[in-house]
Image 1 (cartoon, rainbow, N blue to C red):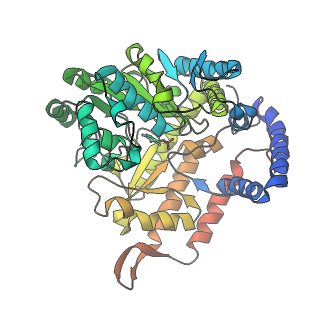
Image 2: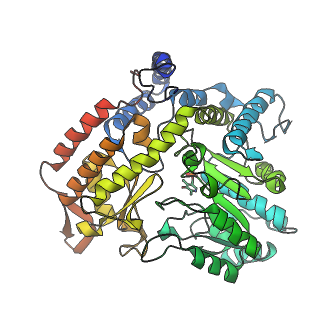
Length: 491
Ligand SMILES: *Cc1c(COP(=O)(O)O)cnc(C)c1O
């Protein structure tokens, strides 16, 4: 087995470049310091903070020094609007190489006929996909007529007429409180203005995706786009079933695998659980479980590839060439056998974390996990998600609050805490450490009391029993020291 590029362990080649990377960062920070010392200081402090906390945010990870270093170059200085070999700027031959290599790795890694490496983020990737599907499936979108106005000036009536011009298109996606994402047709996001949206949810008893209800909703609503994928659903999805439903109603299946792309890349999700062969268009971020730079990717079947390739200029401006380079490096890493081992550990560790909670009497949405996410219902501790999130942070445990299905505390205070295993697994945490993490979390929550605000009950205020934060900090410091982040890197 090759060494993991982030933890490096003791084996080459990771350990080999730890010293070189360390020297590179020391030099870079000296240069930065000479111009704006506060930025150098914040950058140093961020490493120290990340090293010292239990990072359990499900959408975060630690990219390898190779990926991070790739972003800090003059590739950033080049404009390259257009597509590979067909740019609106001169002198793009090296960016052509960069984008081609990134796309090639993406195609090979995911077994996709076509890959588009330009999107700057997951949201951008989704916008590229939405417009590509509209352009492919809807005649004459007629957007030019609204061209005189800035989108921010569009009234609800303008949006209505825009939707009419686009043929009143419909989108069916997973509901937010079942774990869907803002970009899957929800109001505060443009996807909720572009489309008439309806959502599918989970079974109120089991918390599991209800495919029969999903199929019934699709038959009734007849969406142009059926969106699969999630940000907070702790289970695998059967994408063969989603494709069957999409085909039955004539919908395009778009799967947003932003969260779980690493588990697809690492071949933990195979067969019906791998969305790429089933979706017409697959979108993803590159910085979550995939462990690359911040960015997005779109994969497509041949009938959608021409339209996706027009992401620039339809939705995007100049590509971030330095980030596309880092995507290529991260995708090359993800094609190594060590990444498959990593992805399997991510899933095994989530199981261990879930079992750790269950055996200590905590309640989990869906009763467990079979991906990288564990969603803890904190109402049994008498807390809101907001109180639990803050108390955990006081003890050095970084998580985020999250709605649970039919959340009694609404989308702001919430009743859940979302945990993810990708980041700490990168640090080398195994099943025993994640069981201990569950113990520490339950310890914090058992020692957190909601407090009254002067104006009545507060969903944000709490007190943490004396000594709890210190006890948890000490226990996690031991685990963190045994599993160092970027070992050998001194600033
Ligand atoms: C994180 C996420 C996104 C957005 O990614 P950004 O890079 O933050 O724009 C989109 N879709 C899903 C399902 C996500 O989890």
